[in-house]
Image (cartoon, rainbow, N blue to C red; front, side, top):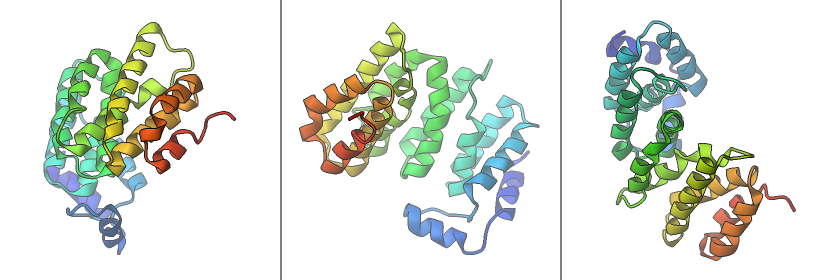
Length: 227
């Protein structure tokens, strides 16, 4: 499948008037075709059936470079897979290369979902993600928490998972000095998800740092804490 083939498939799914609505909602200045996310998902699932992982990486890179909203979402979906061998490192490198281009939450979140699988496959990559936390690029800093959301999910974490969880909470603590809405929201999201599985750590973080959080973020972080 070529890039032109993929764009033709995407364009065929466009809904009249939807592109304008999407542009107004997402605000980032780029081309929007007007394709609903479930329709993009169906297309990508069909593409994956006939493509090797190497071809998928090439197509994903080509789609990403178009800077079309749905093309970038499709690029991320092409590489969202739990086990990718023997190209795990290549896929991680591709996803990393996209991070400096992040400029909207929707595209960034889709790319981070692909990246989450690669972090689970090799947690030593957290060393790379930690370097994102000091970036001048707000979306890169935000991505460090979105891509590490799997570490909020364990009810009975292993010692290594607990160590990683505390490490990431340390990044979140350093973010408290950043008033940016998206950064505060990312901390709230991480804590909200953590609270379902580790309420004690969530309470401890809020006791230590809650006063530095924006009120909306503090409320969001505590939303699922048991009374």
